[in-house]
Length: 173
Image 1 (cartoon, helix red, strand yellow):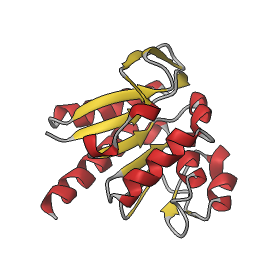
Image 2 (cartoon, helix red, strand yellow):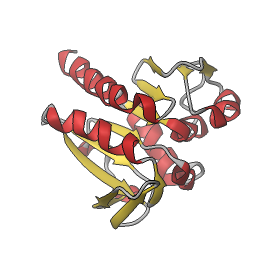
Image 3 (cartoon, one colour):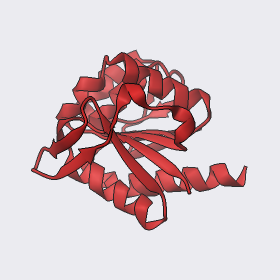
């Protein structure tokens, strides 16, 4: 069974950017684990609650097939978090799907893995992506190699489908 790790802020994450892709993946038989900067209950911007069972510094990339950074204002806690940035680099270098949605795409830019890559982000993060060397497209979603970026909640379900597609392609290779 494939396993995906969702990196989710302790609060003010974007509810639908969490539960829509999670449902897509789980419906396809993928195991989704939620990690954050704390263990226990996490609360979304609109009150959706989920449980973090893992601290981000304790994640072993060998235990998961993909990583997804969930957006919303709360994801700013990861922008300069050494563990969050290292994870993005580790998954990227291992060739595993490395995904982010909404403003969380800034994490990938800050990790230095968007240099020369087509990427998108919630409009507030455009300058950070460009500063990080990304080729900013402004599209709803971009897939460039093993990097998947999406610009916000309206594309959350398709974001989940893109992660699923990347996992299936990885199995074929």
